[in-house]
Image 1 (tube, rainbow, N blue to C red):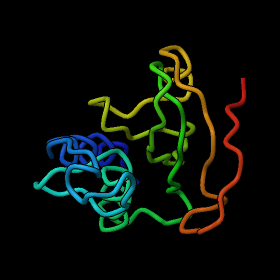
Image 2: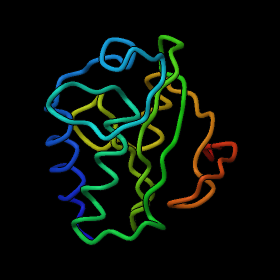
Image 3: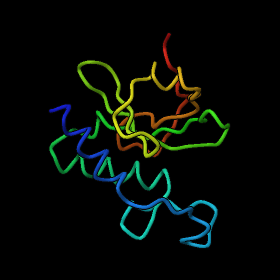
Length: 128
């Protein structure tokens, strides 16, 4: 698959406005796909996953993941397996990030889908 898909999908989805679930849905945590009415991090990650599937990416290469950002807040992203290693699509960054770039800015991994499309989660470890 083309790495340009990652940049295009990330930019397309990141153009949606940010809106917390509590404000939009009246619930502290509600998973839905991002749209022009406003979305939060897990919604952005879901939208990116679906758009990459539409472009022909395989579900096995796409996993939702959760981490802590440099401020200590909990955050959801999409990990995409590529021939050059994982790339992270994140609504806080305009380009796909490597794990090392995220580590450098203070992200800390927590959990990730056991495999693409799974309802099971496992500890997310970033190899040094």
